[in-house]
Length: 88
Image 1 (cartoon, rainbow, N blue to C red):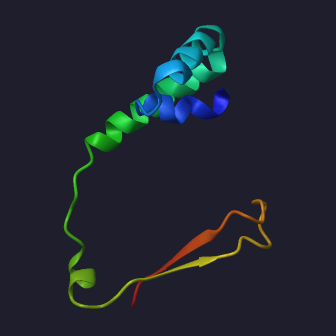
Image 2: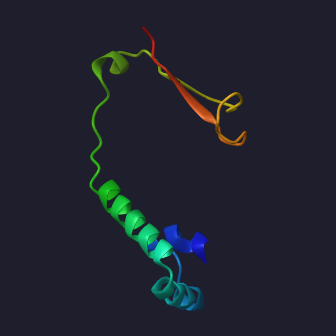
């Protein structure tokens, strides 16, 4: 049940599963708090505005993005690290 909090926050479950989750939600404070947080985040994302890139990026220089394993960090080995490189 706990894994459905994100889907519930986005109205992505229905029918019997929805009814079951809503019954669970009435009894589970952790899920209620998580749904509240996800719902607030989704609302903020809905207000996001696209902005043009900075001039140094719009000039034709390219930004490189690579994904590297997280080895040597405190993160689990399955969590990648995203590295952003911007030309000087």
